[in-house]
Image (cartoon, rainbow, N blue to C red; front, side, top):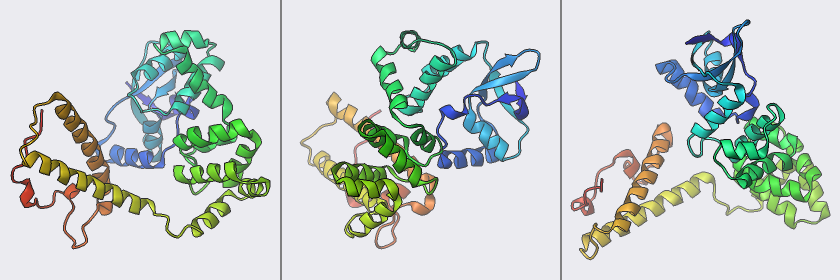
Length: 317
């Protein structure tokens, strides 16, 4: 069915992280190809004909940004709690961060009155799984959660560094987040540096970090001139991949290893999947594709093959 955007109740918008990159790609896709999959809604009130949006917040934001009036939707014949549980169970692995899962579980407890035992049963998860995700929400200060929602702090950084920092000193964690401000967004590596420096620092250093975290990061970066940028690190990773492929090719060409062992086949399939994912990411930004020193296209761009590729074995199905 088609639903007007003004008839949607965005009750659960705070359960998802705002990702500027994904939002930009969604707007571009929606503008070029239209809506490819419907959002999920439940009926809020039969009299008012309003609907609660369960899944599809990114698509709705993109539609609003493009001044669309309606979205395609699937009306779920369920209550809100049942619909939220169903979408969480159907989510692909890794689609939500553990913190987003914790927000949803907390919403089911606070708004819908479910117990941890009931949620673990209905989600087919252990009670410890439910408890761990709720602990992320309860340990992390609200200011930090807001920073994660707004895309200022990566969710992974919050879970790895801000949660233990808050466990040590909740007030210090709050001060650092507040003084970070809203932009630009910090990276996971920057949060890791703040946490590590705070942990090993004396009282005076901790006070400076809490009061001026961005200034500390700039000063700390200037005192480490040999520190590699993200681009340099990625170039190093790609060079390492190239070297590993060359070494593996030589082992196949010398005839001492045959591609019959199941472990070899399984490892090759995993390597294929990883490289396909990497290639898709590179192809999203053509200007950022790596280029060799002499201007030749890199292997990721389908460059010319060398003589060692003549006897390359066929990929395993």
